[in-house]
Image (cartoon, rainbow over all chains, first blue to last red; front, top):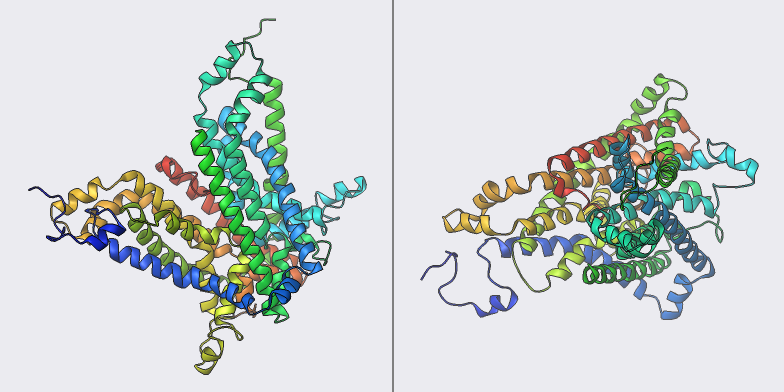
Length: 289
Length: 282
């Protein structure tokens, strides 16, 4: 009998085989054990703490803390500005991905590298720089002021910061799909008499749909939780430009741990739903592809 | 005037120029201008104030704290990432998809919530708060808290980079090594490690950039004690709120240089091994 697994036991170990199909590669128990232990200690148990902390409150108290008028304003602001920023990135992300994949131009490598800047640049740096640029005296702000546009210290400023933060997501999820999109589909469409616009709208854009939605959802999810780049440009006025993550830190500074935890639980719930939505979109796009 | 006919996948020149124009305008306003303005603001009063700002004791202490935090966080997450990728990519077991989702979880959690959870566990009113005080152990508002929060937010970087890479490479080479009598550790060092080194470096690079630049999570657990628990991004905030703009932008310029170096190295790695690119997103 030839076996490739020298450490295979002489007697079958039914319990382990229920858990997994045996692989000849060693170290399964050790690495899985370490992974699960570290994951539990660093991520899962601390995350459970926030749920347990908020569970100390009665449902009425929880509702009062998590859905106070101020908190509801903060959620709506975070969702609304993240949505608008994701839409902006949805539009310009398609154009940027299109330019990067389809066109050749001077500085393409530079543009390609720059797109990832929001991933590499610390959020606080982005925050102070955007706040300075778009404030009424800033380079861009002083051009907008005569037009009657106020771009900093209000929700518009939040949208600007979240657009910066979400910029790479749509571009980077679209790029590989656009690259794999076979040219013959477009050629077929053209040879069947469609003009270029019809080909783009009826053939190309539908094929990009799932990837676009994924990028949009990733940008939106990132925006909802974003803190560092927003607080400098937002103005942070309660009921006007106070985002949900900021409200958590304010409650924490006032030692209102249960209130902070309640808002955090709502935010975690939203993250969890977004995670499910993104996974569903990706499963759908795999079926489509 | 003879016009060349357009290929079916080509856009008319006016479309090209419009698209490129819009993209340049957007990238210029959103990325190039903010990046440039950091250096302009930092050097507004010349090079000497910039040098002074980054060499004053509080700035130096912030730089040191950031370097120490990254020096602990990045190796920790690298070891965890290799470990998790080995278990997930080289073996089959039930609940694998769930495990991958849980490893990815910190990316979906707001940084502020990431900081809050450690305050709830180790803070004064937290689970271990009273015990820690009795034993004079400082976690929150001290280095361990900053390190923990940073580990949390950078947790998935290396693992998510390595898992798809190692899955694509399969287990044939490892199985061959083991069947010829190599030990597990030897198989890893001699067979797997050379195959994953660029991917590992890529993950480490992104992990490091985020570790040095993390703001939200660290700001919740740090307490922002000047010269003691403020990291570089927190120091930027402190100086900015004191209207010391040259100081704030000087430290910010250093962080910009880190970001630019990260992007250049990342670009180089994508040239060396094209299959590592693009996974940073998802």
